[in-house]
Image (cartoon, rainbow, N blue to C red; front, side):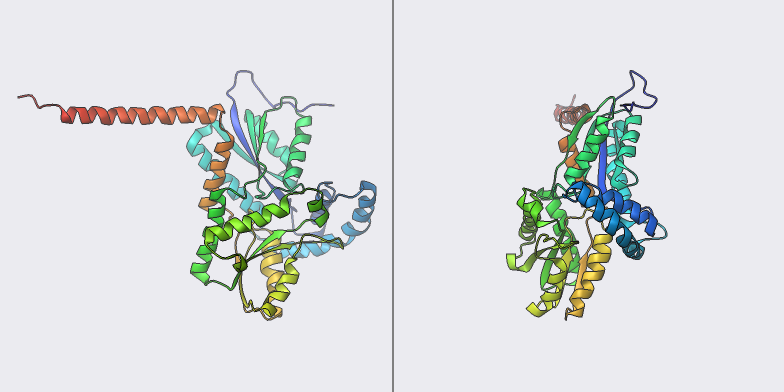
Length: 374
């Protein structure tokens, strides 16, 4: 095997801490061919589809990739922007820049931050190459999935591990598994809900919609289902609302296999008949708005709700680049970097500055309290 070396590395150069921000990914364009390439990579991941490879390859290449890309391309067209392209990519880039700015305020150029997508571009491989070129010897991986699942977080781990298996000089690694139960994260979610209520009024029910996974993954030990319910429970507690004022649903199921229930689309069709004519909808499993939140929730599921008698459907955007979200993620990264020189040195500098300012204040106080010479 040919191992990947650090390009243009010079012995004795300063070392840095790096952060790799990772989200799911997106096609390069809302067209059939790019969407087919993207879906082929995404659906070939054994973490996504846990079926024998020979069987799944027949289904994937013989059926799905012949039919689904053109349909998906039309959906991507609805959310694509001429100026910024894919919403997931543009928001992820903005989040990465905001995290970079915040961390460099604290640590200067000793910390570098790059974005990698699990599928599509910029790839995890290319992002790690950029980090290596900037002399990163300590690396934190931040998957932007609040709730751990083998289909998402573990898949990022697989991609990083595969890259490291081909890397000559592996950096020290730390990996963030989940953050859905951190108080500051829940507070940021609650803030978006309160702001929406203040601006748009409050509905009869708050619906929290999470991306679904097959039920057998839950039965095989994936904790995602429990973490989703935990997120909504903590959110309800932070908002001070009763359990019957919030509901958990799961979206985006495909195929005939049973997925996590209750299904979002079925619930949207049933809610008006239960007396809920006005609802607020939030998607806490997504750190950035994307096809699944914009087209599927705010578009398709809104239509299901209204066609069945619903009168008011208020979609509450994801946390995206909100200041409280970026501040939380930056604090989370700093907590995971404890013991590394970038953090320790910054703490020492801050302590020295505080001591210097304190000594100055003491000197001034002593001078002012000294008896005046007569």
